[in-house]
Image 1 (cartoon, helix red, strand yellow):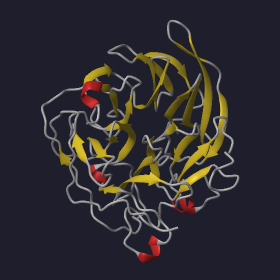
Image 2: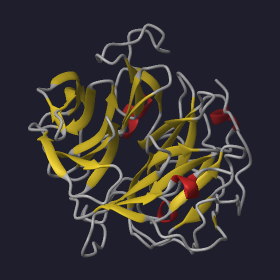
Image 3: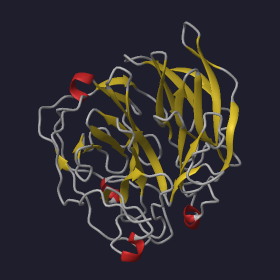
Length: 381
């Protein structure tokens, strides 16, 4: 396998950002305390420029949330996971509205970065990735519309035994255009496990909706779709089926990757773009890299002709044009604090989640919040 280089990493990229917001620089936070040293790295940072335009403040959809982590939609309603409480909340996606608890995932054992993480909806089923006392696991819950709100039935565990730790649990769930369920898994502090295809750690998993291994997965009998990841937390696909993933680096580079079936993305041997000829034969480079103090990317969403990236430590909403994935631009720098997830709603609006109550932010009186950019401002152009 040879290294794929999808474009030069520019010192200062820019695109026309149609959210029509005024931006400024980035501020700092941290992905996780680490005592191990950084892996081999090289290259330069992709610097993101601030977009020009008039101010358009997002609208508040919900507030006073407790470490919200992920959003999914069912029958016109939004479901939100809370990491530490283990609750799944429902809100009217037109908002603003009071959040209503629809269930609590009883086996959640929240600690550090672990807890109730990603959720996804397919048909009449809700999927939840969470940390238990023993491991990380994925459960499936039946859903129904009870008239007054969403009703959630008894769960069934479809995958267990995913390594857990206080940090680097991954946790994003998403259904691909192929109908398969994908899950991001961190290295759980075991760096070398990310290079072990027999381990689920440090990988992106691909499974049938019942948790079984698809026959066309790249490694026979394995859920591993790609590996060599440190802590991937964002997933989405463009209209052509290309899969993108965001990934937390350690001390030097955070990444945006184009995911290939069976691909090795280098961690811990490489962090960011490699300039080693030997590595070129083995690892796939990211299409962008940023220093962690400017990024710490979590959820991503593709809206129109661009990728949106929620950044925790950088406290920005970053945009990457699909026409030039080596370019980027930032919005809302420091205005809302840490951003955990960004999603597109069924009506085309963009929502993003703050994460200032997670123990690393500076929460305001109404934190945490879900904020909405209407579709007439969020459509790509």
